[in-house]
Length: 192
Image 1: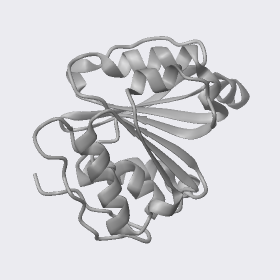
Image 2 (image 1 turned 45 degrees about the horizontal axis):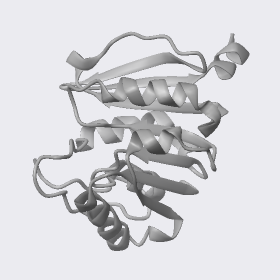
Image 3 (image 1 turned 135 degrees about the horizontal axis):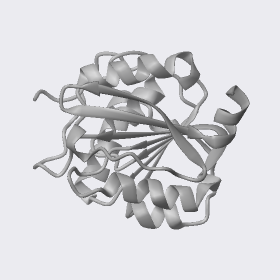
Image 4 (image 1 turned 180 degrees about the vertical axis):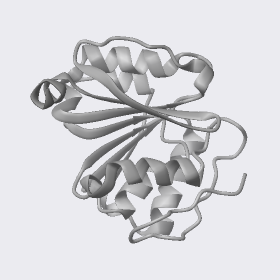
């Protein structure tokens, strides 16, 4: 797989560095483009959490397209170094916060920011995405009433599950990737 690139916006066409080894699961350009087509213009001025940041490709794409702030969380030191380098290469570091932390410990901490979008793309086949969703459901002050949570998983990992503070409203499959979309319950009630 070639290194990820920024598809649109200020940093369009810039190739990003990969994290060495096989600790990350890069998103393909096709999936990333589909994701941001779904977000549309709503990504502009949005506050975005890129959990399990990896190369930073998704969060940097959000910044390139006009997000107000992106916070990247990853435990791996090599990933943090790559995210910082990719932000510098794209000249988007001013609106980014890069935190080396365990994603689960971070989600359990006291919320200091409300995010419009929370993107969860953990290592595969360990049900880490469900664990992250469970913690986020228990500590839901990270989310506003119109927030979306998006999980990037392999189709074999998918399990239907109910949460108290958000509900699944869509999923899209792109080959060996599914994007599962959740929205705050209050949003769902207002649209009913």
